[in-house]
Length: 256
Image 1 (cartoon, rainbow, N blue to C red):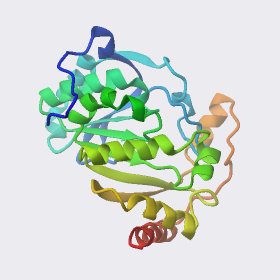
Image 2 (cartoon, rainbow, N blue to C red):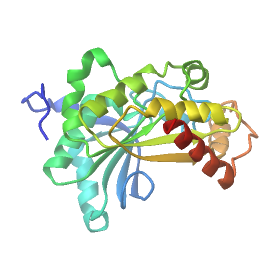
Image 3 (spheres, one colour):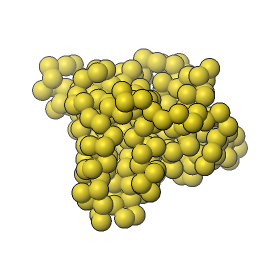
Image 4 (cartoon, rainbow, N blue to C red):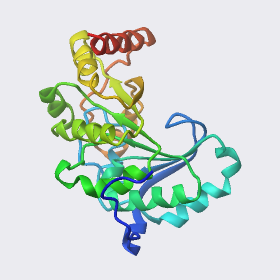
């Protein structure tokens, strides 16, 4: 795919290295098939329910190059026949140059690329900088924290507008998107909240699926180990019935 404004220059050497939090060799929930899941280090948001607070800090983690990561993929390529590589985080877009380099090299080698992102670092005024990434991305898993702006700021510490700007960008270039939304009791649930999310998603033509992910408490122990206070300590996990009902409410709003 060739996008208007795509530069013809190759990435500089520095862009071929990035900061990685960790890598999962056989991921099954972050995109189609079995995948190499690369967790990027660094995230500007401070979501109250984040279960990876050790991925927040910028320029920490392990410094890795695109070739090193792709070599890990090729060592187990037979298992990834119907999968590929997923970049997640942290926030991969916070290392845009390195992420672009990784995906460009992956596409040259016929590897399916999937970006799991909140879109929070997207800058609409610098859209041209994101065109090379779009040209080498097969699928985006877009994690929308909340459909209401004030609630988004309260939940994450950041405005949600860049998320919607990024979705609009992906729609303009027809990059397939699967929406993800974490159901957190008392914070992101509620029929009106979920219907609002559905209504806001209605204009976009590139949406493939909607996933409602139930909040889980697995991060509590990590906060304890890091000596950090966890704002949602003791919060219950939603039931499967609640999760299914939440999805129906989003769909209900989408159809209004």
